Image (cartoon, rainbow, N blue to C red; front, side, top):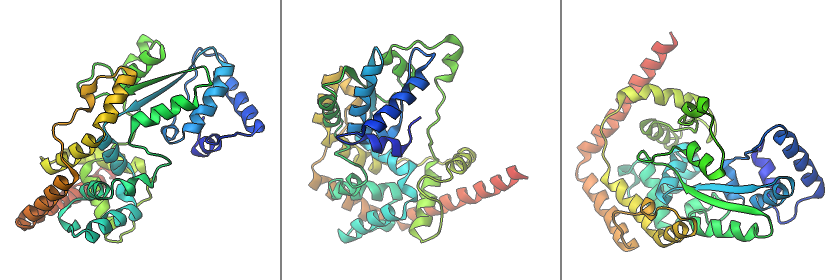
Length: 327
């Protein structure tokens, strides 16, 4: 129902009466004959005024209105945003590389995701904040802001955390529980379906290398179906690639928001262990650790060459398997 431009039109302090009337008509049309109307778009979380305006409109039309959102560890958000979109963006790949070079880090010894996180950490996340409309990483402040904006609307705000592999409920089941919606027995098996795009990490790295080397690939939001198909083929060619250094980067990022995440859990009654980090560093310690890792990798060039060779082999196998499948 909603497109990005529709949400932008709502993300204003004052919305034109004509736009409100048109939206009311659409909401009534889509809700007709149903007990529940669900409006969902990942762009909403960047547009708090759109949430507020939509809440006011819905609270006048319907008996009950809820705003339900989901949060995750900040490092998971950054990793996901890179692995879905930014690995194929020439601008952001170049920005991250330039940040490392400007601060005397050798980007050659780090992969694309590591560069992205190191650049974000070094510049206090400015490289990533520029992509979004507000202080996107502090979930507690974000929900506080939404609560303030919707204080004059009859709405209930609820927050959850994205399920992990150990969670008893999947995302749809958890959402329905929060929304008070009953899932029919004949639809239960469909709740576990995962429809958001998740690409093979080796494919992500290969494309980022191509972009870095000025090769034309695909746009940030293009050809997702092709990438999903290639990722499925690449499952057969995985190799064990443990990365303790990447975990250090992620733990540092999450530790910066420990207090804010604790406040979020207290506000919504969430399990605080979800956001718990295994270690914490000062920024100076993190920069030293990155330098140490850089030196370690430079002292073992053979391992770097071997890793790049394995990646090339996987991409060659994928190309051959894709051609074979087409024939």
